[in-house]
Amino acid sequence: MLDRGPTPWLMEPPAEIGLKGIGWYLGEQKRIAHMGHLLFRPDLAAALEARGFRYYTRSTVDEAEMAVRACRETFRRSGLCPADIDAVVVGWAEHRHFDDMQERLATRIVRDLGFHDVHVVGIGMSGCCLYAEMVRMARNMIVGEGYRNVLVVEVNRCHANDTDRVVEPDWYVYCDGAASCIVTTQAPEFALKSVVHVAQALPNSYEVGPRCAVTHRAANSREVCLRALRHAGLTQKDIKQYLPPNASPHLIKEFTRRIDIPFDRVFLSNVHWIAHPWSCDTVINLYNHCQYEPPTRGDNYMAFAWAEGSFSAMVLERTAHPMLLEPPEFPFMQLTA
Image 1 (cartoon, rainbow, N blue to C red):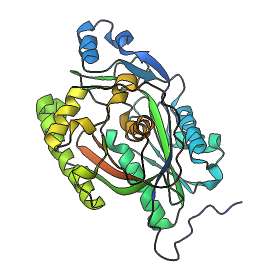
Image 2: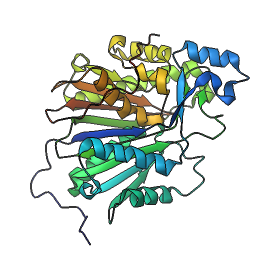
Image 3: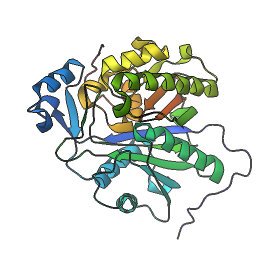
Image 4: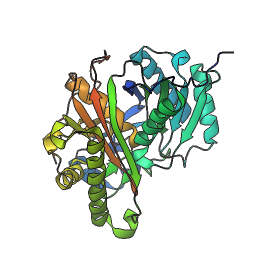
């Protein structure tokens, strides 16, 4: 049996810890106007399309298979294999419809990918901010326990009848999705400059209404983004591209105005094609933006997100290490609010 336990650092932990091998699985692309839940709500369907939503993705396979397919893409793009992985962090922002123990989700991922005797951790409770918390956990496992490569994968799937996909009036359309990457000390494609995730004692949107909720979320998102910039030693002008969650463009424009982010440096192309894959859009949008506009060494990116009382931001810097950039799956779509 291989010894897959941690190897303590003999000296200081490595200075360069970051992400590589971003991969995902999104299922089948569907037209929002044809969603069964909206067939008798043409007014809402029209409002969603007017706000930039056209398609969403729907998975025909279960959560475990979605995660496995995303991880296989990560291994292909990173050049690593399961034998290189010291630990796995599995996350789910939504599991009301999983109909099984989450423990078995991790077991199937480990079995189907061919892992053996590997450290596995499951994490949730962070909503659409989950990816930042997963990356933080993976980074801390590297620093604290001497791991070299930690596989991170989030997976979520909506109810089969689609009734929980739409957040009214026209903020989000949730899609099914899984996204993975490797947090690594070995030639990362993006160095992790900072990651911030906090929870605030805020009322839920259904208690205070959408307008008040937007104000709460914008104010707290601004503070989290500024904290992430301070940790990274950067200012807002140093960020090449901002990567928000795939909400409707008019909502993002309101957020960026309140957060003092230039709207022309906000990536929204995927809103049109895939809608909102929970916190998976954190890394999917990073990779997709790089497909449309290949990065150069030293380019800085900020991914930020919010949930019901949870807020996160990550700052990432493109390194000099090679990165496999494949042709984009969808045409670039310039969305305006």
